[in-house]
Image (cartoon, rainbow, N blue to C red; front, side):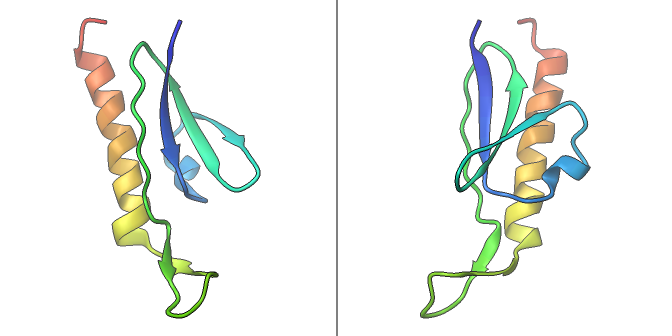
Length: 83
């Protein structure tokens, strides 16, 4: 059985997603939703600090919100598609 992977670089999206398991690797968090199709997505979670390689403030509008929408969209598609 194949698993659908949504790769997300985020810290707190799991507060709103209840049916998703999280695995932590060395540098990123991965959200995984069981299924038959693999879908990958990357979203910026922090603002970039000019002239620095470090992370800036959490970027809610362009990072976390888009990641949440992607996961919720996949969950809604899973409800209506006949897989």
